[in-house]
Length: 306
Ligand SMILES: Nc1ncnc2c1ncn2[C@@H]1O[C@H](COP(=O)(O)OP(=O)(O)OP(=O)(O)O)[C@@H](O)[C@H]1O
Image (cartoon, rainbow, N blue to C red; front, side, top):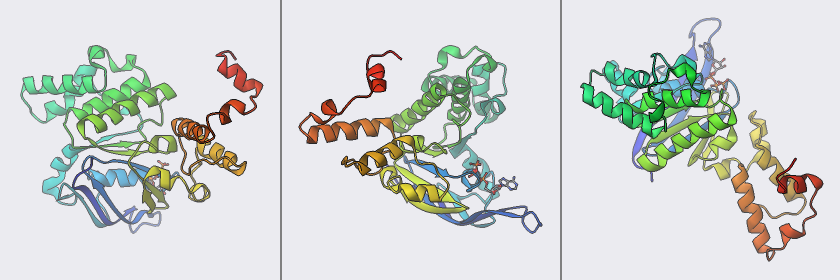
């Protein structure tokens, strides 16, 4: 369930080094609304402006033209700056750059301590944040003993302890191994589902973006598409035109369709492919998959060997 408009980006442009010979127009007239409780993914090729947009959303960067509002507050209003930073928490790519304290617990307490909160309130928030990312039992560990995925979950807990309304994850899983990525994504998905947290996930993994309610596609500083993932990802040739690699399951679906399989458009994840194949099988009376000739590789995988 999503509610009222939480973030409003109106005709926002951003230029790095304005007026200099090396000026870069990173964003060109972006219009975007994020609703409270929404899970939004932002995808785009390298240099399309995703990180610049992320930094505009909590006032780390101010638009050169246009406006960004968070809960009605303009990021260009100096009086609103700290409230906006508190409302919109950012988690960045490299967990090592985000952890500062000798233990997990102290790291997560860092933000609330800076807010000058009472000691019991800090302790309550630290525990709640570490439980939310499933790391309460690692609270006394030094962060350098943790895996990349665990460190990123500590960074996430550090943000949660500030009790933000919205989390922006800027390629927060890009440096992690598949298991670390899955753990971070599971924690974020749970926060969204169970607590109604507004999540903005910036990623170049289209499989991750497929979890979102809506996907924004950026190309050379512009928003070129917004919509539910199954609609946005249905246009495979078009994804390549904006520099995105269609996900493997999307390419497999396209090949099967060319061979006459009646699969729905917009398949991105393995789970969607399995559901589509089972649907096709049911439509064929339950025999289609059983009758399909099996390759030795399929046999090996099926037998659990290899
Ligand atoms: N600090 C900076 N100074 C000058 N130009 C910059 C700076 N940061 C980004 N840019 C440029 O702004 C444009 C948008 O960059 P941005 O990092 O927002 O894109 P992105 O989509 O996040 O890319 P990536 O996927 O590679 O992180 C690019 O042309 C980039 O080179």
